[in-house]
Image (cartoon, rainbow, N blue to C red):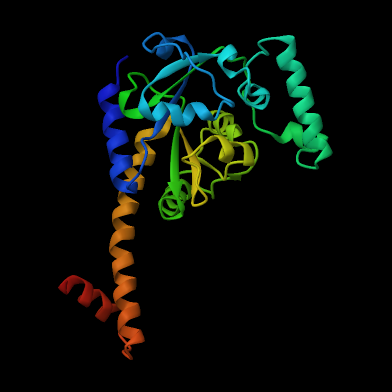
Amino acid sequence: MDISNGNAQIADTLARALDLKGPPIAVCFGAEAAAELPDFNDRVPAGCAFWERAFKGGFSTTARDHENCAIGTFTHGMAASSAAHESERATALATFAELGYVRPDDIPQIPRMDRQIEIVSYLPLAAARHRPDVVLIFANSQQGLIMTEAAQQLDQGAPPALGRPACAIVPQVFRTGRAALSLGCCGARAYLDVLRDDVALWALPGHRLEEYATRIAELSQANRVLSRFHALRRKDIEAGGTPSVAESLARLDAE
């Protein structure tokens, strides 16, 4: 079913409410979405690089396109494209262990897909004709504040904050059906220009997008009003005043 209008509206709601600098990115598993997109025809150093590439338009990928990222294929449940790829994964994990970065006991705790994935498509949410499986949003701390508030209310608990590997946020959200935050990893921050020091990655489950977007928009408006309230209150108190909350609210209304 073509739900492109709904996806475009949700993308617009999120972009406006959060004042996003880049579009929300839809991640879709399977052949249905891929059939309407061109094949990826370039090379990337890691699977996370596809997220930023999708800012400019959609494309579909297979395990071969992910062959430079042994950890990404692990989290995404993609079969090794070759024996060499499997060897690369073992070498990477061994190196991480030697550095004390990923210990053997840590590996089972890394979120990964619970099924084998053959095709992954990436595209701006506004252009998606089908319901995405996961939606990715790059957000700074102010934008993340609103997303945290929305997720905490809708999921009835604080969203998890993941570290390495950044790509694990996709299976985390796909499998739990709940929003999550990734602070990225040193690899993703090396491969993605958008992951600046003040930016983190959020992911939302595709089947609950409208629910999240609606609450994010409501909280964004509330935060704008309350931010002005607090700014005025600070100014008045620092000037020597002792306004009550009611007086601060009246001053806000008078603006």
